[in-house]
Amino acid sequence: MKAVILAGGVGTRLQPVIGNDNSKLMLKYADEPLLQRTIEILRNKGINEIIIVVGHQKEKIMNYFDDGNKFGVRIEYVLQKHPKGGTADATSYAKEKITDEKFLLIYGDNIFHPNTLESLITTSKNFDGVMCGKEVEDPKTYGILEIENGMVKKIHEKPENPPSNIANTGLYVLPKEIFSSIEQTDLSPRGEYELTDSIQILINNGSKIGCVVAKEFWS
Image (cartoon, rainbow, N blue to C red; front, top):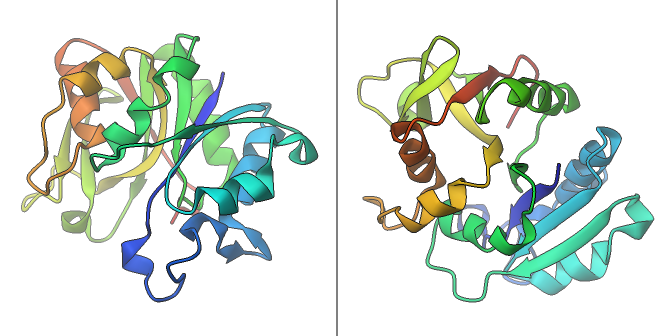
């Protein structure tokens, strides 16, 4: 299984911490870039083919990680040349690199426990795809998953009356059919092409999308 990491974001909400000449994914976490930690977790779980979608400050990322050899993985880069905005648009750039039926997708600014990734991959064998959720105290401020019989029924974005307290974490195993759903995805109210809207199209069309609720830390 290949992994796709979305790493093209500007990091507007982290200004002025990161500055305009750096990527938020190169911020240090436990003395190493955040993106390096994610890559090492993938490698240790047997995922060694990684596609990184880059954009803002791409040189910082590409110069540091190169082809991935020194980290024990194989890295390919896809440039988000004309970003329209949103996670669905960013994901669409990886389409030509995905040849398997399923792939792992990670938002690059995620901090997660290695066990969570293992649970996600194991559970994906029983579903068309899997979303990772996490119980939160303030569900009105997250994308919230409505779960029925272990599967995601509906995704609610910052709902006034949350159907659960399980937030979407931005860790997924997705079928390659997601790219067709992305093509059908409209702009969200905040003016972006949201991956959760694309996943909802999959669900509405009959795909079985399971849910893993992370027990370990996530941020």
